[in-house]
Length: 104
Image 1 (cartoon, one colour):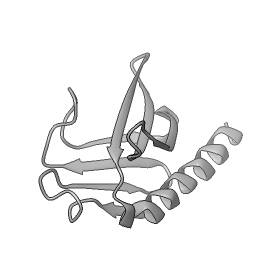
Image 2: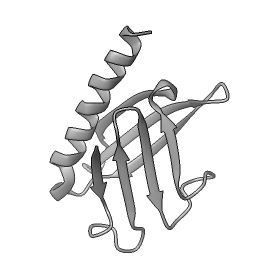
Image 3: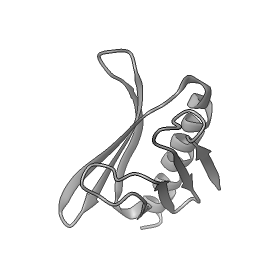
Image 4: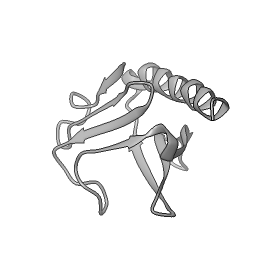
């Protein structure tokens, strides 16, 4: 289980993210976009998780997931002090997704 607590870095919009090898969960006090504040998604519905740098130099964690035939993107700015934990989560997801796909 990997758990990342963004709450100290984002006191205005606290968030906790966890990944247990099959399910990605996001817990927050605030609603993200048009979805609920907290959500969970099975690895089979997540197409991609990656880390990107935007045009302003901010590092973003991005989750691309399929839901009812459409794709939704979750994006969260990553504070520098959490970059290693986020990269660990991304690597764990990629490894678990590859195993899930190969086991069909």
